[in-house]
Length: 565
Image (cartoon, rainbow, N blue to C red; front, top):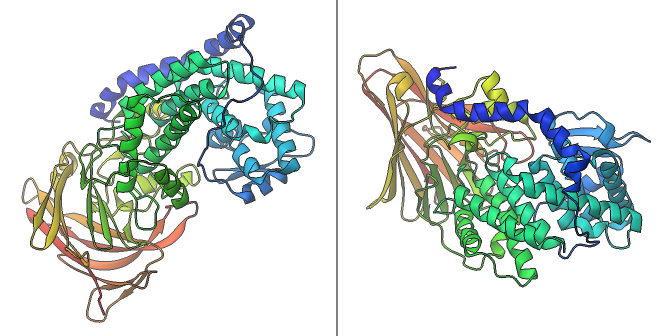
């Protein structure tokens, strides 16, 4: 690893290394009798409120659970007769997190019925019996937060009419977990997990009658995390639309719990929720789901619509989300979103992508040009490839990404696969011309390696029936070695792609619209691609304009034009 890359990471490396070295001492201290006495206190026997969680729930997941199959993130473990699933080896850390985060409870809750209630009750009892004492990672704040929120949201499945001894053990465990979370929530990984931990702490105070001080503490913690993570334009510091939606989901649960308790929400939280709602609208395509930027997936359009329906302000999206680093062009039925930001800082770059100046384009409810998406936890083997520049609708030089993932080794082991490097500057501007609205942007992510700057200009016509673009690759020094370039336009798998006899490409959309693509300045080819905007890997197509950089400036022009009968 280059020294220039390593030096900025030294403080985080030292902190992560120290935390790992102290794990045995931390577990021993927090699991001993004396420390557990600090977790005692008033005990409640019911939930004061059940916050509404908009997380998607599917009956097929409940059916699998009732058959003994625990499926999380594309991996499945079948519980054998007489053996608890908590005693079986986990196929991955992600699967283990889901199991101990009680990710099975929402599906059983939507199924309802005696069989689901009995299974959930037994699983909770098994967990308490095996993991009632502090251990890691089971009691880590990010997993504990998920577990508590699922119990608060879906506890009505198991608590009413439950057996008294079982209920007592549950609420003793909840008391100890909530009090532990109050002490260690800051130890959650920086970013969304830490905000979730703060929200769970606030919810523990609102949903359990013994927790008024925790509610106050949790709201203070949540305000601090919101201030640190939510940008002035309403975006998330990770620049991920999906991360923003997750934050909003937790924030809305806290706000609605306060409303149920007839408590006035802190102004900072209410204001942040309003800003986030506007930014979610910014990222929303015509099909109701989110754009694919910076490691985010589409997400369920119904979840997005449900959250937006609870927004009272209904602010209109910005044209330029300056702090989040995105531009938005909208005209007629056409929407274009463009990434004009840099690599997120520190831990917020764990899922970041090297897609600088990439764009997505939709017409009505049909996506046309997309980015390839993310493997996420479901398809982890795809993550590295999908974070590369080539998996985005932008230009790549020499088949090299404009930013790099930490390579395998000690740094990655401690900090995770952060994205490093990337451009120092990504200036952008927008202007109105006779041809419509234009966005001009550039990035210097290839300047250090190749001495090359990428400039992109896009214009949308007033009626939204034409999107024209121009990409320029500028070499700092003429006469350097010849390098290849490729400008990619990944096409959504629902779009039918065919060549036209007179040149160009015909795009047939699911909504019956037809669009023609033409280009100049390079060789246009139709190649295979993939799309991971949801839970499955889909075959797709990409339009690739390629060539060789020989002059000080190489320019490629292209246009998408709607075919109007």
